[in-house]
Image 1 (cartoon, rainbow, N blue to C red):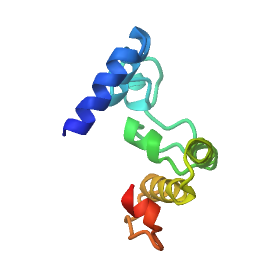
Image 2 (cartoon, rainbow, N blue to C red):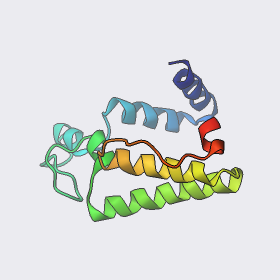
Image 3 (cartoon, rainbow, N blue to C red):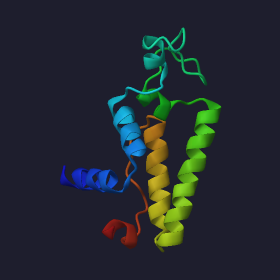
Length: 123
């Protein structure tokens, strides 16, 4: 996908070497999650430290439903919405994005957004 390539090129150009290495580790899944910490003998189990799910992976970190994880996720989604609202006048955009991010994080089926304003439909 050309859009994704453009974003990756931007990240590579404007990110520090440390950040680029972190992204590489995160996207490959080989980072400080339970699965790898156990394999690297950094800890004696692979459990999620919040919800105790066995074999914690990057995917689990994103979708963990523990209360603390959900609070952090919702706070970050609100911060993104506030940033969008401060840069753009289409309030429906931040609401739609927040709805989609929450549906995705919770593993829910993505349902049609309604009502969609003309501004959001054009975006």
